[in-house]
Image (cartoon, rainbow, N blue to C red):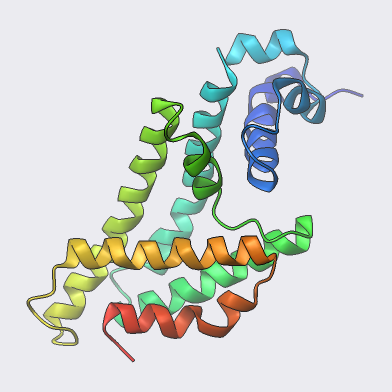
Length: 200
C-alpha cells in the first residue's frame, strides 16, 4: 500500500535530507529521492521546481527540527557555562543516534551540503548561512551572560568568539565524518569547547 498523498511533500523533504546528508548533494538524483520516498517524478515537480529547491526546503525543515533542542540547551534559565556543557553533550548524543541509525558518522548536514553547493547555488548558500547565523546567536547570548557573571573577560568580542566556537564545532564534526569515528568528539569536544569559550 502506498503512502498517503498528503504525505508526499514531507516524504520528499525527509528523504532528501537523509540521502544528501549520508552521501552528497551531487551523488543523489531526483530519481533516487523519488524512488526512496515512493513518490513519482510528476509529484516531485508539482511540489518543487528543482532538486536545489527541495534541498533548501530540507535544510529549513532540519533546522526547525533541531531548533527546540537548541532552545532547551540554551535556555536563559540555565547558567551560561551549563549551556555550553549541555551543547557538547547534546551534539555527541545526536551524532551517536545518527550513527546507530545509518552506521555512519554524518557530521553536520549544513556542512555536507553547504560546502559542496555554496559556490554553485546562491539559494542553498544563503539558507546555510542563515542557519549558521541563527546558531551563532545562541552562542553569543550565552557569552554575553558569561561576561555579566564575570566569568570571561568583559572585553571579549562575543560575536567574533561565537563564530570561532561555531567553527570549532563544525571542524570537529567534519573530522569525525572523515574518520567515520565519534572518537574525536568523545575525546576532546567538550574540553576544547570550554577552552575556546574561555572556561575550564
